[in-house]
Amino acid sequence: MARRKKTILRYLRIPLGILAVLVAIPLLLTPLYLFVQPVSVPMLMRMVTGQPVTRTWREIEDISDRLKASVILSEDGQFCRHFGVDLGALRVEVENYLAGRDTRGASTITMQVARNLFLWNGQSAVRKGLEVPIAAYIDLVMPKHRIMEIYLNIAEWGPSGEFGIAAGAARAFGREPQNLDWRTASLLAVTLPNPILRDPARPSQGLLRVAAIVEDRARQYGERAACVGENGRLAL
Image (tube, rainbow, N blue to C red; front, side, top):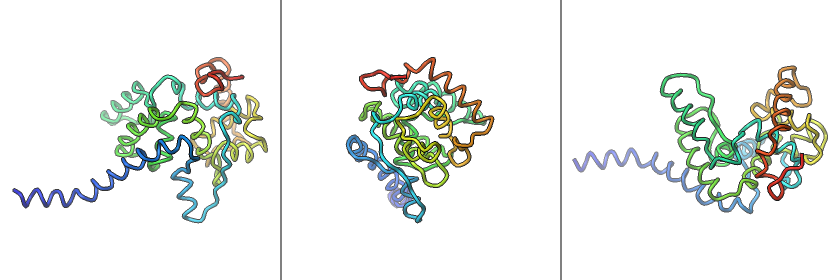
């Protein structure tokens, strides 16, 4: 029996060690990222493989409130209300997964920050299982405006290594991120799910239609994004 336990522990040593590292990294780095400008895993992967990376950090005060509202209403309408994880959406996803139905991810903005900073892309139940507690921890440690600031500065916004809203807005429209009207803000927001294929500078009719829906939502319900505005308000 003792020999069998030793054998099991020997086989588990490597996966348990990997799991311990995956847990320790966000525990240690998340508080540091309250003050330090983080680099995402996709950015690091491009750097180590010699591919170009363009990213100029912008403070959240220097980013258009229309863009913030458009991103939240497009990506995560409950961002200001949940604790990093939308439990209702996640419950539906778990039920669909167990029933063998298609899943959509139920990723909040905070969960996307967790994935981009500490995990990997690709559909995986293991990754999702790690993503949820890391997102909750990020939300516990960081205020909402800092989570949003990081997200808008690490999100991939173009097909050639453009990361962050400054690079995305410059590539698509030749504008600074504080100088976005409703059209450009909504087009940039709906680019996020697939910046490799979606081009806000040359939008398809489908992308224009989705951007118009997001713009309408952001104009009507922009107050739902107030937690990322200056003094809790957005100038829309």
